[in-house]
Every structure is written in C-alpha cells, then in structure tokens.
Image (cartoon, rainbow, N blue to C red):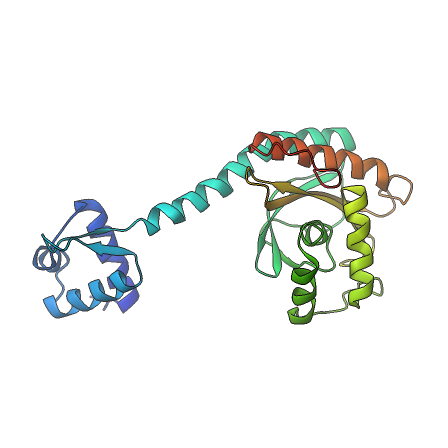
Length: 258
C-alpha cells in the first residue's frame, strides 16, 4: 500500500469534513484511519490556515467560508468564459481572425479560451494555456492601461523583461507612451512585439465593480492585420469587450476604455 503524503492526508481530511458537514476529531480519525495525533495536527494546520473552523462548544470541525470565497473566484472566471464565448464567435465571423480570451495572473497573462480561424496556418503564441508577459502583449497593455501610474511603474521595475523581437518594448517611457494611446483609443496593439509576423489587438473586460478581470483580443498575421486595418479591428474588439463587460454587470460608461 502506497504511503500517503502529508498533503494527500490533508486533502482526504478536507473531503471527509465536507461529506460529514460537522465532525469531531475521534470520528474523523476513525473514518480516515489516521492516528488521532496525526488527525489533530492536520486539523490544527487547516484551522490556522482558515480552511476549517471549530465550534467552541461542540469541538466539531466544519469547512470555513474560505471555500465559499474560492468558489466565487472560480465561478466568476467560468462566468467570464461562458459570457465571452458568443461575442468571441461573432467577432471571429466578422473579422475572419482568431479571437482570444485571457485572464491575468500576477505579472503575466494566461490565454484561457480561443475561437480560432481554421483557415490560418500561422502558429501563434496565443494558444490556450500559454502564459505571456504584460508589457509586450496587447492584452497585457490593455490591462496595464487601466491601472494607476504607480502600479505600472512598480510593475515595470519588478518585471523580468525579455526582448522577444526587435520591436519588443524595452523602456518605461515607451511603455507609458503606448498606454496613453490605449487609454485614448480603447484598445491596445501588439505590433510584432512577441512574435515577428503576428499582430494582436486587445481590449479589457471589466466586471460589475469596474475592475479589469480579463481581456479579449484578435491575433493574426501582420500581412492581414495591417496598419490600415488595425483601427477597424481595434474598434470591433473594443465594442465586443464592452458588450462582454455589460453582460457581466458593468454599467459605467467610461470615456476611454469600455
């Protein structure tokens, strides 16, 4: 029989508490087959970490509200994907280009959904599951443009920067100039900064309280997303992001970003 790790024991314990809703130490140890001392130690760690709470009178344990907080985050993210999908499909049909949905994770973006242009043979970095930095991607710049100047400056100082192409932004002044343009236009452009031959246009998605939770983008070969066509596509992306934001409950009509 394979010996369980401490993490596996803790996860089994959480599952057991969730099934019983409220349970004492001895019953929990008997259910799991763990020594009472091991069970007590795990309960202490999980309670101190706020995953469990103990009733002071009955001494029984139950799941804490932390799981409700975590579930809300997961549900919110799933809601964004479900809400954004129809608008992404329409955007692909309208432009004949690949449409991406990205979430933000610290100083990176993560592509979480995509409606691809099946006719395109170009292999792009915007595949689902791919991570990329903020400073040289359309979706990243769309996010940064909605943050304070102090936030952007702190991000730039801390970011691990890499020059992916000769067009990659490489100084804070250039980044701020780009972000000013994003605020003015309502969409951001990655002009072959991550991959030569690929241009992306992106706009932020806001949740009901107004904060930017994701971004939608169109990516395609720069031979199709030309400098003349980019403003037209950018406006379509901006409108789509605004509709997704509205469906998520965002109602404020800002003068710059949707």
